[in-house]
Length: 165
Image 1: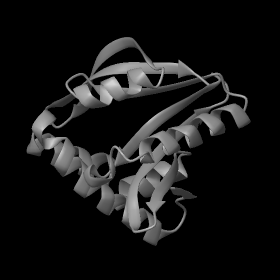
Image 2 (image 1 turned 180 degrees about the vertical axis):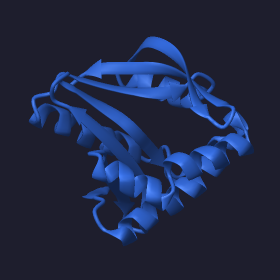
Image 3 (image 1 turned 30 degrees about the vertical axis):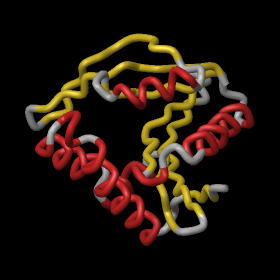
């Protein structure tokens, strides 16, 4: 149902940044507010920020369905720790609930297994209730919580969730 492709070219980075703008404004403004969304988009999901992350080893992938791009993921493998961090995992609102997330998670788990890693983990905002419930249904646990200063007067107040590959 979905096609997953690695992001390598500038035009693909532009697509990720456009998806981030749409998805984050739709989903996160009610949770963390417009000012923090704007700050985080600029700091973490602008074209230049994504390009730099890719140079530093973050693996971005576009998610596509028949009628266009529907989301993206960002993965950070750490072979030394035998972990795979899901740094980004976002799907457009109108494409949720049709299996896109399930297929993308299957892709992530397969990467984890093929690389011989043992654990997948991610951060999720403590007030992002629907997303937390989805991850719990997929076998993740809330391992711990953390509050992290991200600059600009903002913090990320998250659960760290994990599961075995």
